[in-house]
Image 1 (cartoon, rainbow, N blue to C red):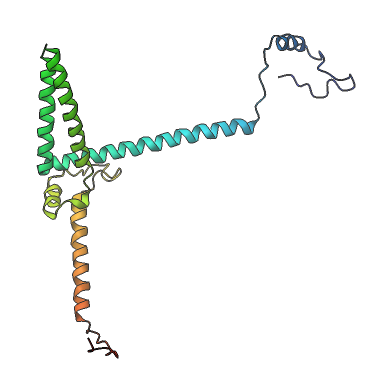
Image 2 (tube, one colour):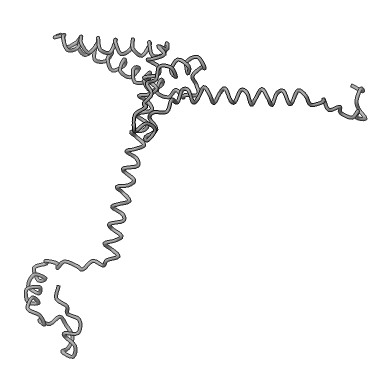
Length: 210
């Protein structure tokens, strides 16, 4: 970019043809063509920071979504391993959905196909509801027996990367041990409380009147 500062000093006001490109700029300006504007370093840095911030925000949201999907998959796996009644209902619902899809693909009767499609929509909705319901189960909601069954079935990773990404931890064993420690602490507190003498309240003025 041509430096113009000070070149027109003492030559009067107005945008004069001081440099060789001025006449071309005047011509384009008359046609409504604007010249590229100089952007300050602060503006460029600000735009760069905003772009980087947007990318980081999107990456965080993506990681949160991936973690939530992984949590739901884990809950479904747990329910399958335990063969819970809820999971059996889900499998039955899934079977019905597949049957309806098969019937729709293999029927030529448009009226029947429309009825089957309506039923399929309802069954798919119920299937999704069951999946969401099972996925929302918390680890704390499992019984001790269920936790023990899951704890002994999990395949632990003893490889080089074990523990680096938090996937090798036996969360079921950790939860059952936490409960065990909590019960011991609670029992000890109850024992200490039982040893304390019962505090006798002073007889009030109105005691015994009623």
